[in-house]
Image (cartoon, protein in one colour):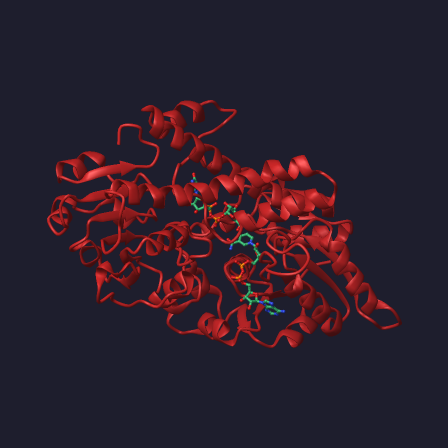
Length: 467
Ligand code: NAD
Ligand code: UGA
């Protein structure tokens, strides 16, 4: 079975870049990415590559090479499914906000809607691939919906595969072009090999792992849980370093050089953000409770609890260091995205920290090279507005067009995202624009401490017992 036409439902952070790379690496395959969001599809089709809906280094050149050749974006979902031999489901699976499992279980309404649309529109034999991150055994539900459409002669037939995505935002193109591994779960060997053949166009065979469906679904949740657990572990030690005079970076290097532990994912910071770590762990917690494993559920839930605590801890510490009050004080916030090199703010640590500071009556000047003011307003649930009476106790925020604008007149600067630009700032010049005594809170530990101290600023760095 050789795949000639792929349809991907969902043109988001995963569907867009993943399909762009598949199209780029497999010019013989026609790739159609569809979405119900017209504005998103228009942005993917925009002649100006600066307007793509997802910001990822390198994405623009991949899209430029493949778009219009064998990569197409459209809202014509059913026709694209009908024409495809293989359909990827790459839609959002956020945490449920109400009903059974609210706050923990994944909301599968969009995945189920996709399965029903595929059941209705598919022609011939169609391989359906779960690309979204899903609870274990979701493939069984998808299979049941599809089988209902297969009854009777001349009806379409289906094989369901799990092929979770491991890309990280900010490095998506690199992760897709040189993945550590590709994982394919399924019980139809011909379908598994058909998908493996696509990846084999650029991924070495030994890095294409084949498992059963449930192992593949669970491996994705487990990978994210293990990665997030490392961040909570190092953040817990960062707090202890601050209390004891140790330095978390020295501790991280000391333990990370043990090859059994490894150096990656040991950067202490303001806690993990992003659309997936928290959602996927909470989903794991929900499933463990469902399967009668409360101790396992509690274990993983503590990873999220520690993360939330770390974010509140940083906001609280800023207030305490600034003489117990930030009411009416101008605080420069450098970075609002959940990590560098993305415009994504989902679950960004900056959101919780800024909300806590607004609650304390602070006046925030927020700078981020890629996040729009409209997005910040949505995340803070508050429009940008100057506060006429700074001491009224009501917090407010405004967008700062440059770092200089943000810090002018500020009592403190908070570095919340590790954008490269923030690592090379001239603190001597910036300190001169601030109100004294002035503070720098480096929640990412990316600023040169000597330069900051030489500029007369008082420095707090995450995990630094000397700071
Ligand atoms: P996203 O919200 O950016 O994109 C999802 C898209 O699906 C949206 O554009 C939405 O309009 C579209 N959609 C929803 N229902 C639809 C339907 N019935 N028909 C057509 N289009 C529909 O989400 P994302 O960040 O791309 O994540 C998608 C999945 O991939 C999630 O399960 C997520 O957990 C997983 N994942 C995400 C990342 C990441 O870095 N963002 C990495 C790995 C895995
Ligand atoms: C993460 C995983 O790394 C991907 O493998 C996975 O595919 C993806 O989730 C997903 O399922 O959505 P992503 O969230 O895009 O990718 O980015 P990461 O690099 O993992 O960073 C997540 C958060 O952890 C960020 O807020 C980052 O700043 C923080 N982090 C990361 C740290 O605080 N310290 C570290 O050492 C590493």
